[in-house]
Length: 241
Ligand SMILES: NC(=O)c1ccc[n+]([C@@H]2O[C@H](COP(=O)([O-])OP(=O)(O)OC[C@H]3O[C@@H](n4cnc5c(N)ncnc54)[C@H](O)[C@@H]3O)[C@@H](O)[C@H]2O)c1
Image 1 (cartoon, rainbow, N blue to C red):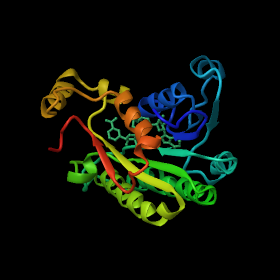
Image 2: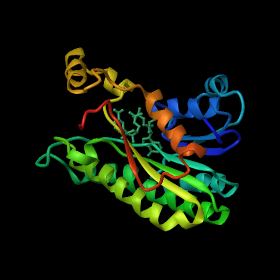
Image 3: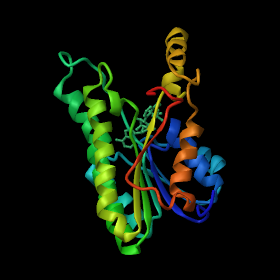
Image 4: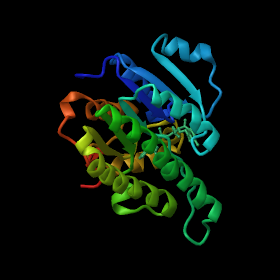
């Protein structure tokens, strides 16, 4: 992929699933990666996977005190920010609590706003940069039991379009990526029957792989995507056709 070597790339939620695959992809492209996530990961485990060009920031992106380390990394220069961290707290509307609502808004939306703001200010000054936000195909059509999650993912698409309009003149591009059913550990651990039902609904008849989302993040961050901003790319095997 053109133009990713030596780029400074920050990925939230990088310890697991799509975030981990994205970290691997950018590392393989020669980028300097900053991985942000909550678990206390063993240094040896990370160093084995990423022997160089890697910083791990153990941070809860909903905590202002933890955002300071992220701000400091960004202030040293940032080329790509991938707001990948996301959570679900599913319940139908009668059972959803304010706590469910607030938790999902805090991680999926408010933290993205804070990190994007930090990145935007630095990227505006640099006159270059890419911000990518993890939406979901459910943002387009809604999803049973996910009022909170869908509201955040639809919100991220709107946020990406608005930032694209504000930052385009500074050479900063902002896009969203909307995965469909992706075979992350969470999805793979569901009963086989449920996974088979999901696969049946997808025109390509299989779940997506985390690496297939990582590939789109890499493309959108590369020089090949230099005229793409303010859009949302569905990576879903055709599920919403
Ligand atoms: N897997 C799918 O099928 C799918 C579909 C559509 C959208 N997505 C979106 O893609 C993104 C990644 O999904 P995934 O399946 O890889 O998820 P995952 O649960 O495997 O990974 C999410 C990571 O985010 C981290 N995280 C959560 N809260 C955090 C916080 N407060 N601070 C820092 N890190 C935090 C978690 O620790 C975890 O490592 C999410 O935004 C998700 O909504 C996933």
